[in-house]
Image (tube, rainbow, N blue to C red; front, side, top):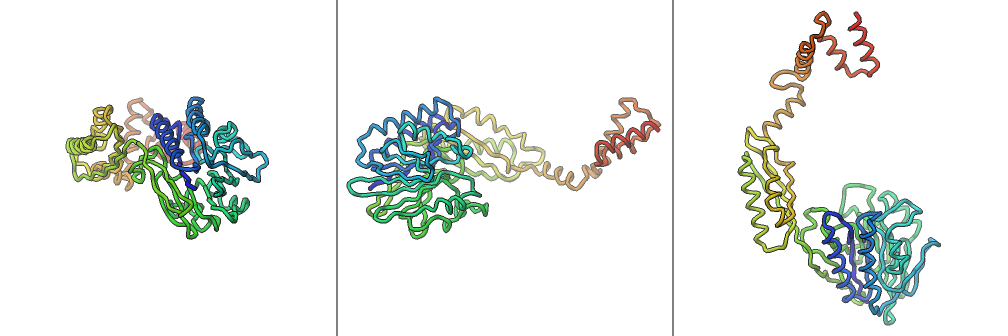
Amino acid sequence: MKLAIVSDLHIGYERFAEDAFRQAKEALEKASTMADAILIPGDVFDKRAPKPEVIAQAINIFRELSRKEWKARVVEFESKDPSSRMYTTVPIIAIPGTHERTSEGKENVLELLALAGLIVDASEARVIIESGGDKVAVFGLGGISEDRVREVLQRINPTPLPGMFNVFMMHQSTFELLPFDDNVIRFDDLPKGFDLYVDGHIHGRYEGVVHGKKFLIPGSTVLTQLKDGEQGNKGFIVFDTSDSSHRFIEIDSRPFFSVNLEFEDATPKAVLERSDAEIEKVLSSGSDRPILRLHLEGTIASGFTNTDMPLRSLISKYSQKLVLEIDSSKLKSPDAEKEIEQIREGNIGGVSVKELGMGIFISKLKEQKFDEDISASKLFEILSSGNTKEKVLKEADELLSS
């Protein structure tokens, strides 16, 4: 049996709403012509409470798919949740992702598609698909908080069934791919004995091995995060259970470029000209309205600051030709860095911050014709002492009264 794995459609993603809808539609329609069943490991929608028109977009896509003549059918559904049911035999199996997750006990938007008979929601459930005597069992785990995954896996105890091909499908981070949090599950935490492990959530494509079997992430069908790992065409995976082979199928997606530019003592003109040249290079590739993210790093010439960089003019200049983002946070000004360091050390221009503050304070008091018999320096000490509001007011009142 051939299984199409299509993930992270993010229908309703506002920044690239048309891309999200068009690319989700193309991926699912193409998948339906190449596979016996479709597996969706989460994030069909971009928001847990999408607008009605966004839900309508998804319904239109899945309604057309449900009208297809599918040779494979869902023949069995089993869940420990008595409220979970199967409302269609169409072999489109999905789980909710983190973007669709709601409070425990509340229905999520993916369940609406299941109630309408457009998909089968396999969250914490086992679904069996049959075609020509071949059977595939899919056990799903929808996206949940990282600190609960191990406990939930222990509670539901996903177990493969004998005599059929078994798939474990989830929507989670893993430590092997995102080694930043010990709460994140590891490959070894996943249930053993399955023939294929499928994951969503990660927007870049990944192929690995878990317990000696393939672990596949197709990546998202639309660009959302503008990260280096999302460069390359979008698409989905077709997996053949007969020989455990798979291939990646590309869809027509907007190209994304991420470029790093390094500078040393650069003037605003030099930064502008080099950035402009890089943009023209991307446009010369012939791509239709691509997405470009420029990362500017290094140092600015003395006498200039980051705010002197006329980068917004580039965004305006190319607004009709491409989507442009410029990150200049790592473009440093030696002058600004020196001032920051002086502040850290407690002095500016050889004068301590405290002395500078006191000078300004006394100057302002004189402008207001403040009583010169009162010690301005002592009043400053009280106001800048860091004591509680009540104590500061009390001491200041005593000084002024005396």
